[in-house]
Image 1: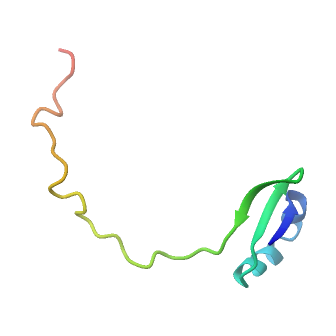
Image 2 (image 1 turned 90 degrees about the vertical axis):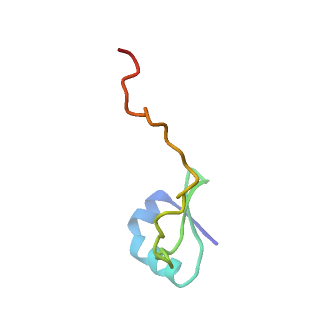
Image 3 (image 1 turned 45 degrees about the horizontal axis):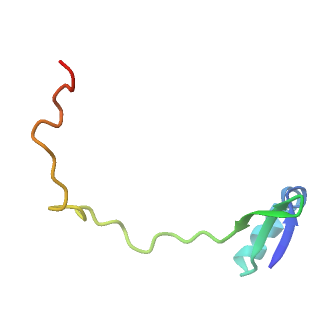
Length: 69
């Protein structure tokens, strides 16, 4: 794992991205305190399926009436 400061990260962002893609863990720190971890982006493997809550949620018939008349 590579820990670098923010200034170095801004200066060498392209190199850091290449390192992360190659499998190296990169942590960006401020004043020696770790703040964020760079990880490679992974696209969603399956598209979302609508209707997962079907039959599990019930809405009152008067949900859209005024609260105070």
